[in-house]
Structure formats: C-alpha cells, structure tokens
Amino acid sequence: MKKKSIALILGLFFVLSFAATAFAIQAEIPSETTAIVAAGSTNITLSGDLRVRGWFKDNLTQAGVPTKNANDAYYDERVRLAVDASSGPVSGRIHLESNLGSNDVSVWGNGSFDGKQSNGLGILEAWINYAGSGLLGVPSGIKVGHMPLALGPAPLFFDHRKFGDDAIVAYASPAPNVHLTALTIKAVDQSQATNSDNKDIDAYVAVANGEFAKQELGVDFTYVNDPSGAYLASGQSLSLQDLGLFGAGSISGIGYTAEADFQFGKLNDTVDASGYGLWLNLNYKLAPITIRALFAYGSGNDGSDATKNKQLINFLSSDRRYTLVYEYTLKTAAGAEHTGIANTQVYNVGIDYNPLAALKLSLDGYYLRANELTAAETALGQNKDLGTEVDFNATYQLTKNLTYFFNAGVLSEGDFYKKQAATADTTPTVIMHGLEMAF
Image 1 (tube, helix red, strand yellow):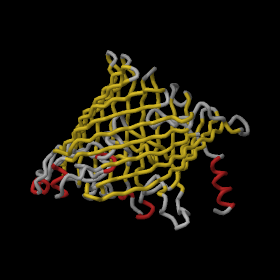
Image 2: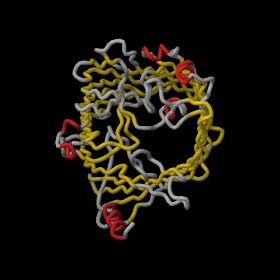
Image 3: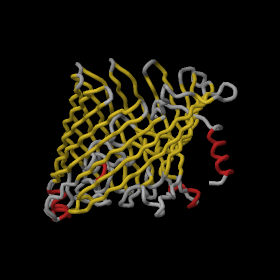
Image 4: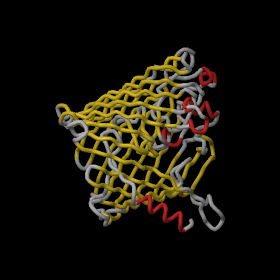
C-alpha cells in the first residue's frame, strides 16, 4: 500500500466519530482500554480483534448439501480494528474488518504459493451519534451512518449485526425505562447505477420497548419495499410488513426470551404474504449449571396456493443462531443457507457447565422438522423429518484477552435429506476451533 493511502486512512481514522442507540447494537469498549491522547476535550479509544479458526467439514459440500465422502479442511482469519471517539454529546465510530464482501474472513492458501494474500479491507461500521436532552426536552438523539442493526431479542425477522446497514436512527426516552425508536434503512442502493430508485431496497421501522414489572417488553413494526425483486430468490417484488412482539426477563427464577412475528403485504402485487415465526427460550440456573430449552417455529410454504406466500420471510446475515450444522452450514428446509427458522420447527434442550471461572462448556440436543413440503419434495419421497443434531461448545480464557474455543456438531439427518440426496446416511459433521485475541 502506498504511503499516501496509509496516511489517508489514518487521517480518516482520527477525524470521524461515534456512539449507540436503543435500537442499534451497542458498541462496547473494554473497561481496561486506555484512551489515546487527543487535542481538546475529544476522547479517542483504539480497540480491535484477531481471530484464527480451523475448520473440518465431513459429508458436506461447500454448497451445504449432505453428500457422502465430501469433506473440507481449512483455516481462516479475521482482523478487526476500531476507533471510538467522543466529545460531549457527540460520538462516533470507525470499524474496519478484513476481506469484507462475500465473507468476513481470509482463507489461508487462497493467495499465491508463498502465502501472500490478496485481501480486501472494508468498513464494518462508520457512524455519528448525537445524544442529549436539548432536542425534545427528554433524553433523545440521532444516529447516522453504517451500523449493526437487529430487531427484537430473537433471530426471527431482521438481524444484520454482522456487516450492518446504512441507516438514520432517531430515538427518545419520554419516560424512565420507556424507549421509542424510528429509523430508515437503505439496505440496497442501486439508483446511481441505474438512474432509478426502483432498484433500491428500503426498510422503515418503528420500535417501542420498556421495562414493566421488571420485565422487558416491546413491539416493532417494519415496512420493507423491494420493487425490483432483488432480494427474493424467486425474483418477486416485495411490499412487506412485519409486526413483532417480544419480551425478556425472569419469572420465579426462570429466565426467558420470547418473540412472535406476523407478516402482511404483497409479493408481485398479487401474492399475499402471511408468514409468521415464534421463539421461546427458557433457562434455569443451578450454579455452576444452567439448563436451557428452546422451541422455535417458522412457517413454510407448500406452493399449493399461488395467491399466498405462507413462508416466513427474513433478513439475516450469515451468523450461527442455533445449530452448528443445520442452520449455520447446511441448506435448510427453506431452500438456502442461513435462513434462521424459516420452514423449520426447532426443539432443543441444552446444558451449560462452568467447572472453572475460565472454562465454559455446553451440550445441546436438537430435533428438527420442516413445516411444509413442496409437491416436488413429496414426489421424491421426502418427509418433514430433518433429523437430530448434537452440538458441543467449549471456551477457555487463557488470559484476560485471549480465548480458545472449540465447537463440534453432528447431524443425523432424517428422510428430508436422505431422500433428497438419494444416498445412505451421510451424517454431516462440522468441527471448528480457534484462538481469539481482543484488545
């Protein structure tokens, strides 16, 4: 990289600024972090993250299809560097991440034979926030830029925390423990390239949440407009409304996270959207053990009614939300990877065990079912049994800023996959481990 380019990036780093809102995911700064000395009253903090992972996938193609003797083994690496700045009521953040675009990692060996990588560097976050009480006479603010965003406590409808979106967020707290948020999201902007804003994907969101009787309760409403059909694999235009009701808290020592989403609107101006999703997660602590249970349901579409789309439509980045194999690395019953609970029933029992302060272990069992089958799937002899999965996860904190992690998952697939692949049991297996250093 030329010296002028490096100087430009460093210059931008120390000029821009940041902070968070009730809607956007909070950007936390480690308490041990030492601020960089800056002129005047500006506070600047530098932080980052280095992660190296090793992967092994057995009986599973890169396209997420269970296939006998298909395997893959590789390492990848992620680099993140963030600058946080604040001066009075104004704050901001610049957050860079390696190889943004199709993935968030650099796969070792993808470069030349001597190991040189041809990686990109992208902006993961870049936003400005103004917070105070002078705007409306109550605590309020506005946040503008590219930021991680998510709706509700459960990954049902909208979760873009991994790479973020361009957004304008306005928020206020008219009463203690009551929060109101309104925002507009520019998910895709192609108007400059096409000279038409009909190629854009826009979302408009309103959220109200607060604490009532020591329980966190809330409601959100989202309108998504995609007139060109750029998002759906079917190419259908989208005019979608999603109503979400959510809660989190504890009752008689049992912790819970609950959410229900209901969808309305049109696809191609002729097909009614009527998907819905349900999520209930429970936990009970008996230190050093925590027992967990999850039930989740995402509606599916059998294709029998051309005037209705019954499948839950969601906007999710490529993160792990429950299972390591089925949802994170496999093509699901919804026909693609990373579809959350769309066309899926999830039954889960898990246990967390902390034998040492630095060691965390967890074991999960899942039973998975599809909610609907298409005529083509039925003709192949497939049924709704997706299979059972067992996942094991462990993290060990070597030092205060260095963690080793190990994850393994095995899916014993049901006839939904056996008949689709027309093979004997393949038992897709995923093992992933690595080191992560945060500073």
